[in-house]
Length: 161
Image 1 (cartoon, one colour):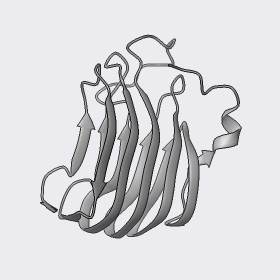
Image 2: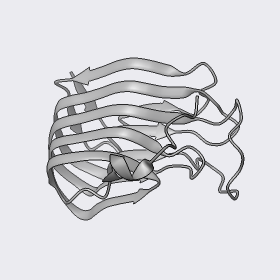
Image 3: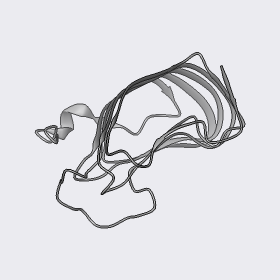
């Protein structure tokens, strides 16, 4: 398959029902704004988990190839975890190669960090690298260098649901 122009694969913004078990495999992205994008925020709820993007060829991505935006259209201070707090976890992004303006950003909530993110063999020629906020996982053979914090530093903060 092929994406030409547009937003790439975007999940969200309304997520109250959750999004689970999605695989994007063997797709070419040309001149898209993103490749993999999550857009959600406090009050939209839901889980986004068990998502896999693999074996992707990307060309001339105009913004961030990978973008987790849990502050979509808002940026209030830390809030208590509620039923409407979104949870983004258990993502695998592997065998992704090509060009983008920026490799990616993981903008996750302090009360609901993104976790169990795996970046493996992600090779992007990009002016901007990866940027992370409250994002945890592992990275192997990633360029530009991953910013994901080590999963072990999360401590007991994994029981959100």
